Image 1 (tube, chains in turn cyan, orange):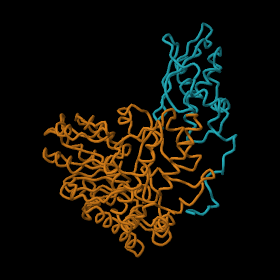
Image 2 (image 1 turned 135 degrees about the horizontal axis):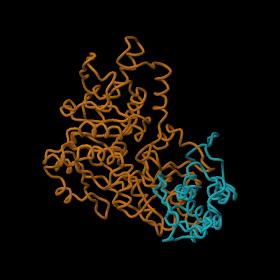
Image 3 (image 1 turned 45 degrees about the vertical axis):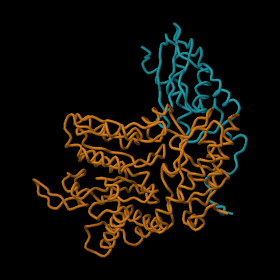
Image 4 (image 1 turned 180 degrees about the vertical axis):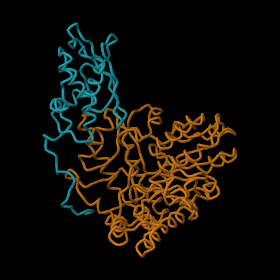
Length: 142
Length: 412
């Protein structure tokens, strides 16, 4: 035996099924992301970087005349968490108006993912939302 | 059984590194991020404690027992570092770390650069040996050139001979790459630099912790390294410089302790090394680094180097058995240290690091502060496992099992 067990462990012990990050639907979105691609005629576009790893996401938004999301696409590469988050996020914003997009909170994305995200990986999870919100910065309500 | 080819007394060593003796997520902690920062033995932690509990006082100022003791210990630490790398006492400047050491050089040497002068770096530098030079180059209208790397992840020496010319004033090179693990032929590069009267700087952040280093043998003009990567505290680092060069250089930071005489109009500088240590220094960090060096010397740097070669060979051999795993850098253990970057096809380095963490294994996932090199390799991130002398062959096995588990999770 190399080591004794230290009562002041850092981790919480074996992970339960619920605590596993890489659930089936996360991996599905990672391997087959929804809304992947680009829109040449995008109304707004923005590229955001994750300085932690250099990952990047570029988001393309096309709005209709009433400023609702007609189409959305994203490009970039990253880890399963960032890719699944942007894949789910883009699914959820179609037909929403700009005010609604601006109101999306960090917690909404974390709820969509439905997995425990630690302090280090939260930047990955929120990279897509950050890109979305930055893309809207030029838009003013008159 | 702790080790197949036991050249170090690992059982005894691991008892000194109390932090390793814990469980993370229900698994034995396997710490493999030593290229980022190393763990500290109880001897270093106790030295820090003793300083604060028994003789905390400022150095070079108080005429009383406590200050005499702290001054003595702080200066002794400089001597220990000097002996450790084959330098003399005046040539050892304590800084915050490698980054500050290189900034000191960039600012102090940089002001002598003229438009058209050239600084030569390599394609495998850490950001800390690129960004300070970029800033100085902008200010002085100097040029930066990079020695390219081969497909094997080694420096192209033939190219270096063409890139370093009489226009070159400074050559600054990593002794060991923090991504590829490559050991660079610094002696040869130094010779080329000196043939053209350029100053030769070695970034020793990844070499000094793992190899026996002698600045006379390398014949570098400057050597920068960090205490925290060699079982010392954070916030303490070293700049070695040849005495005659340091004497000619102007200070980097100005203020207390670095002066000889100050009037309202003018000041003159203290003797070496204090000319470069302005303000109250990291006293306890310096003392802790001194104890860390005592510890390393007790084991022996040659012994550490030999043991790490064995663990490198074993890790490379086992990693290469995993399908769809790409290793960056030399495959020959003689040409590298035990810092191994790799990617598994279909798993992002971040995800791999997260899954390994759930198995109690700490590795780095990311760009390792070497984005230009990562671009060159055509990747944005890699996983990196870096071993130190307290790691065991069982740690390698744990890593291999962890990677296999990750592939299973990702259904690869």
